[in-house]
Length: 322
Image (tube, rainbow, N blue to C red; front, side, top):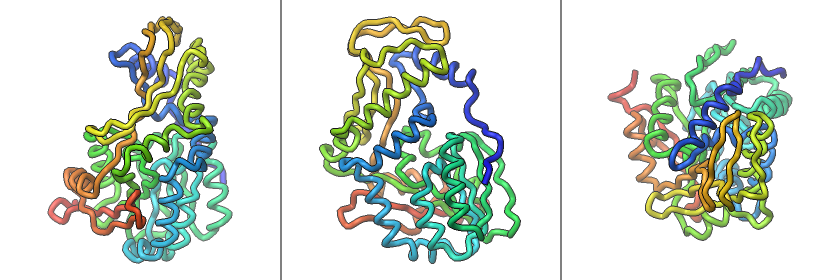
């Protein structure tokens, strides 16, 4: 199935965000720009690394608990997925749901969206595919399915919520609450707090795939923003901040240097980093408190035996339902 005209970030948006972030102190870049075509491919490879437990753990939860999740959601749902990626987890959910009427993936990578929808459309010909190539952080009107849905289910697996600082994560949960409507729900993946050594290993795999994924952002800026980053002069660094409860990923300049980006000179000191991603880890109570601030309540939770990961079903607080 062909995906509608892409709404990926315009080049001027990328340039503006890059220059603003690289001119700030400390330097930052939005994590969404990690996911160009090559970045999306590398992220799929990260998920296959032995150190990266979140994907296989979440898939195991979905395999074991999908029927219970489907019962909690109910029949004839319209599934809206933020950041659909390859769609492997989606296959398990759609297979279990009772008579889902439509699937609405919202994905910033046009190539990833095309591939995912093509595969899912072949597997689920009875489910209407309504893809949106857009940034799920931006408000986009949801399409109307041909068959009326009983409820909207927002599917947000993969611990992507953890890529946002606390306030931004609460805002995103509030956006979900607004989009799901009075009778809606969201199924959200969260990575739970655990041994810091296990967490750090997941973001520093021995094969170097995560480092390649991070440094690919430099290649993208070279290609799209006429930058002249030398990848050999930068390195990947991912460390767990136990106080904040999150992995903080930086691209670190190994030497003092000046780089051109979109016609502007950006100075780096030796050892200076660019923050490119957070990966927050939660306790069950952490997430419940965030959900409550967004007008949501956790109604069901599924986790693995080792309590490494959880899928949380949230619904609007009754007193705040609209």
